[in-house]
Length: 233
View: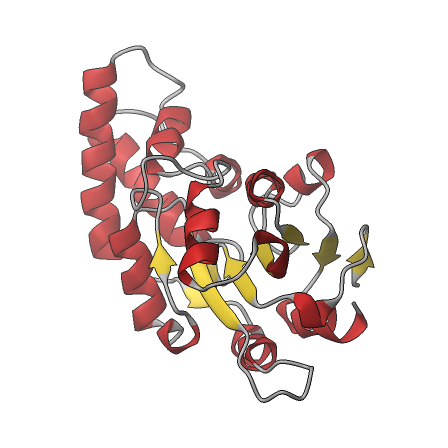
């Protein structure tokens, strides 16, 4: 059900920036399997998928740090991260799928509701490294919808730092107030706040509990509700 915490005009939104994991695609199992593959390799106990899912959102280095229990050995952490990335590179599309309703939602969002015949622009900003992010978007047929696809290593900082979001606004020639960030975690909400943009949280993703700590302007329970933002606001 659509929940509105702060009213905006949907026709004013010219750029929609999407998170990837837990927002556009369900990559939970492939990420968890890759983390557990890393843990097995280093003789560590595996973790439940639900636990690993709660560690996702701040980028691969933080995911591995959390999975290993925040060890002090930075050299080991780097080695473990490199093993995880290599493993995930080979297994990133084993089970990852686009959430149901996403394709229809993206088609609807792309069309402006003001009758001017213009297209609303869309982009991806993930904390996942850029190469697997782009590979997943392209392999699953999503690339046609996005002007840019950026990852956690595309800029000197990651979300919730606003650099990536503000770069996307500049590259798409829109003001921050004309942009909306859609994501499944409080990280995305904080990114929007830091960038002076609007925020939409999706409750079907990996970290809906974090949306309680950082409430978005709007919240949806299904991808099919996303186009409603531009009809009702």
